Image 1 (cartoon, rainbow, N blue to C red):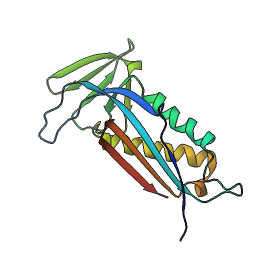
Image 2: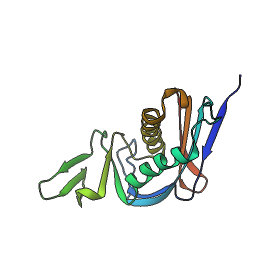
Image 3: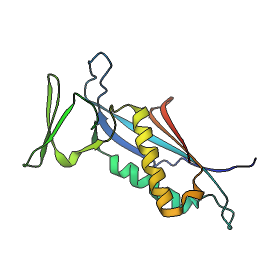
Image 4: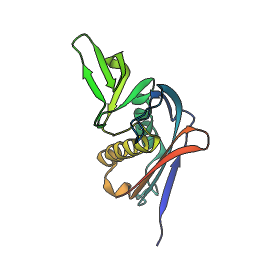
Length: 163
């Protein structure tokens, strides 16, 4: 069986975010940040032009997601104990047990994840990227998608989707 892939890794496939992890025992990290880097591999059928997806078409979609996250605080909207309350004054109250934060609402991104781990970030990024790519280029162009997000060199989470 034959297969075709493109691999995308650009210097500008990056985003800087604040977050904290909540551990199984209920403790949490201090609020801190990372400079994340994204790598994407797309497997698909070859088009009549001999392409899986044109690099010029795929790169902006990856960049859109990086830009969406860049310079925000990532919050796990599906954590059962984390309370996120958007207030009428343009701020959001974030409460986890004894920790309380008040942040401008436009500086956060609440994602449909249960923790802000790099594994969950790669899952959200990969699923969202897959939705956008298939809506723009069709299902046959994406047979398999692999997204790796590094939070530091040598430390990454990987998500793979087989369509």
